[in-house]
Amino acid sequence: MNFKISILLSIGLIIGCTQSVTPEKKSKWITPLETVCEKSGGKIDANGCKNNWFGGSMICSESGGRLPTLDELTNEIVSCQGIVTQSNRGIGEMLQNIGNHSYQKCYKNHGFNSVTYWSSSTISRFHPLAIYVEFKGGLKGALPKASPRYITCVKR
Image 1 (tube, rainbow, N blue to C red):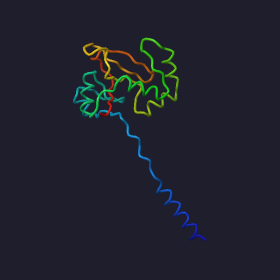
Image 2: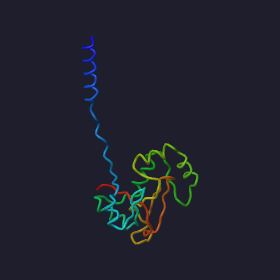
Image 3: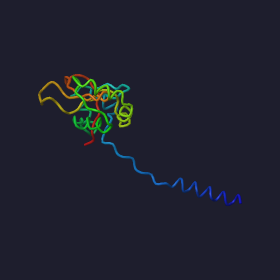
Image 4: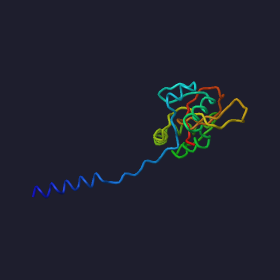
């Protein structure tokens, strides 16, 4: 009797160990390495690599990617059921995002922090402002390209 139970347990363990593993979904996002970030003049802290817009472009290029477009960043907000809002208006939507625990958890699970990230989008080619996205409140806005913000990259 004990022999039969032992065989059944062994078969159960073998079957349990041979379950197929679904390959992990490959992310299109690249988190810059500390060495690449600092080589291009950036600084690393708990939230990632921080640099100005020009440095961000170099960091992404060195990382095998590019700065994301405004649409790519805002699509992450929308995919997490957040609301994209302008930084100079829409306080109600911003507060909704901040109070939405599901949204807050989702964008973090996607690898983002509640900080501002540079996009590749600009006001115009030679204009001194570029577009950023801030995940905590779902904000988008424009800042001087020389301002330090966080860098995330998209694979080429």
